[in-house]
Length: 459
Ligand SMILES: [Zn+2]
Image 1 (cartoon, rainbow, N blue to C red):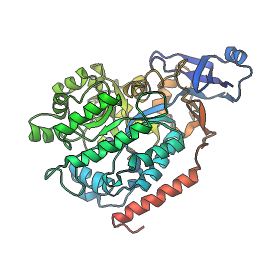
Image 2 (cartoon, rainbow, N blue to C red):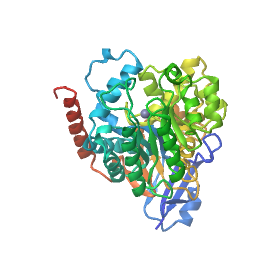
Image 3 (tube, rainbow, N blue to C red):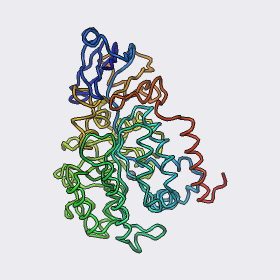
Image 4 (cartoon, rainbow, N blue to C red):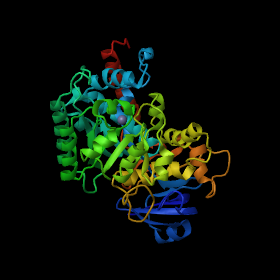
């Protein structure tokens, strides 16, 4: 039986935000988890007269679900953690203290499960239907990815996920020593997940190999990551140039893009988060290797890392997508708006990153980066039915000529009413249908308390 969503402002984003068809009184029909038809409400109401359910989208926007290409869902356990932030003088301190010592190294499989359920639920409710998740937590091995995948499966969000391969030893400075055996454990974790959730095929959950960075892995480990990605067709997710370029140059006499290109890691199947401190030559390396960039401007601001050269990347024809890191709220509208604004402020140029470019980052570009360009990222016949129905809270008319500005100016995730993934209604009237939100919230807070106590915080 077909599902019909009708009487809405249908914004297709096909083939992209700028050229996509917008239908003032439009409808979308869904059959077998796929989009079966898109058109005028009048026409589709006739063609699908027996559809059930019929969702009346009067006064609402019908659009594809948003795509977040980089995050770490267990980080929500560290939200608002009362620690001494005066200890964080540089990004380096932040990485070692906040990233590793206070969070990742004391994360358990139970914590990953509870936090991932919470983050996935909140993301789904506010309009993110696909996420690329990089699980970290060396002391939660083995089993970290099982916990993550179980949570994702239960909540109903679409995901690619992997565990980060790193030679870093918990509690030991990376300047002192790295250990290839640590990377071995993480490779095993990724490979086990790939048996259950292969990268190829149409499943809602797929494996994507995780690699931490060029500076926490030996060249042998980096080459092994490429070998596995080629063998399994799973692609790679990695952090590039989040830390100052000088760190890599001091260690290797080369930048991260140079090292990664030489070791054969880079390619069109790579999603690289951050990509901040880059020279023209570094950018050219990423461009010629067709690396996809996951732009994460809010965490980059938090860490004092600077602002990625996104306008230059777009001008060079690179595929820039939107990531976050789960350090702030799980509402995609906040990241979309920040990506839209920060480059204007940084370069004192209000003409940079018009709404359509910000939207493409969180839709079509994200889909292509994950190798899912033919399945998600826009409303098109034959694509997966990953669809949002949004009731715009707006002081002005939301019509075809204003809707793109509405996204960057006014949209908030709480306006999302209905969320459909693979043709299944996972959020109805703003409420999750897959899990009990109060239980998910309570379980996450309980795990956050445990993690905080491990940090010596009385709670
Ligand atoms: Zn990250």
